[in-house]
Image (tube, rainbow, N blue to C red):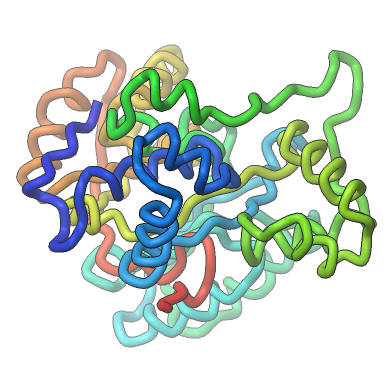
Length: 335
């Protein structure tokens, strides 16, 4: 597990802040009173810490549409750009509703993003239309996601140990349920769109606020929200700046693995505390991941020991993330 050394947290933050972030990853809609009771502090303390994390660490809880249960295509795109054009291209892509995160890497000459087109038409528009016609993009590498080993509903802080096992057990939200065998995956119905859009703005919006946003009775809002979360059609994710926890370095990993070892290596990566996201993809690198570490030296130790010793790994390409343009929302809120 990641060990949170309080001395390495950003000034003004402590272990209680790490515990609160971990608690929100486990149950993003948990009432402050419930979190406070488990952590042994007052409701007011949790509310105050939450507001400060929003202000200083960009904390935000938002709903994310999960395309995995629907079998819809997702892509990791790597765009090599003329240096002076990369920031503007990244900003334009970040404004699209079908991008989940956008980063600048490779010294600011490459834009890396995760795209989640909502239809086949949107997918073709992005991959075959807009990007090839965008000036100053020198090369496009499109990697279709084949399987997710880690990420999505599984938050990175769940590996942290910020919460004790007893605290985590007390705060764990209802488990997501898979559709019964032989049934079609859950799809977001047209009448659910206002509710989902409201949750995409604020995943902790109260039932009364969701009622006003949708025009539906509160009992109906509660029922539909529980159904959407329980089915896995959406999940609630937590956006924040990891530097508040003392993690200042993030790297893209393009890993080439012997095909017969792909599943084994992917599952092993999912257990590594440094890995926040890991997927099997098409392309020269058949596994892509994001590693989050305290600094470059910490990443070197991970690369040369734990990752480097996995059987079946044949080649690893690394690139440091230089600037986060979009995490889950754009622009990143600062209050």
